[in-house]
Length: 167
Picture 1 (cartoon, rainbow, N blue to C red):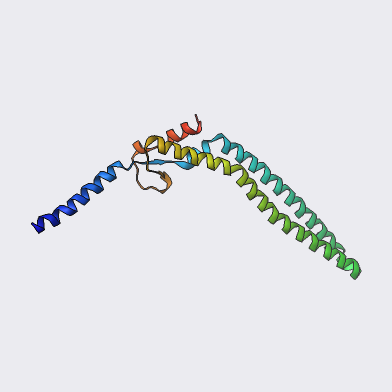
Picture 2: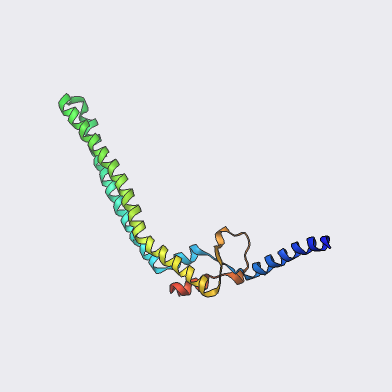
C-alpha cells in the first residue's frame, strides 16, 4: 500500500505539471525586423543621422582650425618672440580644450536626442507587444534572436505588425 502511494504521488505531480505546461502559451517574434518596419523608427533614424552629421561637420571645422593654427605656429616658430610664442601655444591649448569639450557635449547631446526620439517608440512597441500577448493568451513572447529552435506557427510578428499599424 505504501509503495503504491509513493508511486502515485510522482505520477500526480507529473500530470499536474503537464497540464500546466499545456496551458502556457509561448510565442516568438523577430523584434528587430518588426521594430525597423515602424515608420517612426525610419523617421528617427533620419533625424539622428542629420544631427550626427552636423556634429561631425562642426567637429571637423574645429579640427581644421586647430590644424591651421598649428601649421602657422610651426612655420613661424623659429622667428617668434617668447611672448608671442607663449600666446600661440595658449591659443592652441584653448582650441584643443574647446574641441574636447565639444566632443563630450556632442556625444551627450546625441545620446539625449536618441533617448528623446526612440524612447516613445520603444514604449509604443512594448505596449503593442503586451496588448497582443494579452489578446491572444500568450504567457511569454520571446525574441527569435535568442532561440535556437522555434515552431513557425507560434510566430506573432504579423500580429505585432498589425497592432503597430505596419502594412
